[in-house]
Length: 299
Image (tube, rainbow, N blue to C red; front, side, top):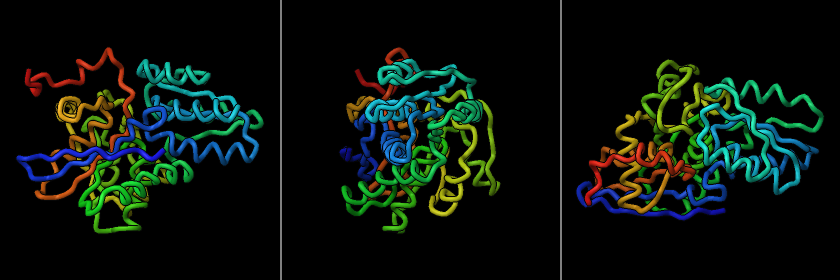
C-alpha cells in the first residue's frame, strides 16, 4: 500500500525533515513491496513453495504473501533473530529454519533447500523483481513531497536503496540519494571505497535488519551508479535517532530505520527538505530500553 509522509521542522537547523513511513506498511516493513512483486510472478509460473533467507522482515513478507497465495513458505533466519519477527513469520504459517548469524550463511542454506520441483528461492535483496518492488517507494516519494533536496536510505544488502535511487535519479537527478550504514556493518561503505564487493563477516550492531555481510551482485552496481554518498552512523547515534523518533515524532521504529533518521538529522546543509526512509517498525518490546538514549528524554 502507499504509505504516508510524516514531517517535522527543526527550528535550530531550519531543515524540514520528512519520514517515509514504511513502518506503517503491511507487515510493518518495506519488504512487502518486493516480496509481493516477486511472488506474484513466481506463482503465475507455477511456484508452489517459496524459500528465503531473512533476518526477519523479508521473511515475514514472504510468509504473508505465500499464505495469501496458498503456497508453502520456508524462512531461514539467523539463530539470533528478533523474537517478534520470528513470531510474525509463524503467524502466517511460515516454516522456520535457524542457521548461523551471517547473511551469507543463511542465504547459502536457503538456496540448498530449493531442489524440490515447484520450489523457488526468493532472495532478500539481490533480485530484479525485489529491487523493482522496493523502487516504488522512490516513485511515491517524488509524488508526495515536492522540492526534496536529499533522501536518506538505510543499507543492508542494497535492495531498498538501489530501487529507490534508480527511481529517483532517473526522474530527478538533482535530488541527492544518500545511503546510511551502521559503523559496525559498513560493507557497502567499504565496498564503494575499494570499488569491489567486500564481505565483513559477523556484526553486532543493534540495527539487526542491516547485518548483511556483503552487498548484492545486482544491487552493488546500481548503488555505484546512482547513490551520491554512503555515510556511517555510530551505535550511539542510532540510539539518539530512535529516541528522537519516539519522543518527537511519537513513532516506534526499528533501529535499522533509525540509521537513516540519524543520518538525516545530521544533514550538513540548512534550509533544505530532507527525507529519511523509515524501513520498518517490528521492534522487540524487551529491547526498547536498550535502544533508547535516556539522556535525550526530558521528563
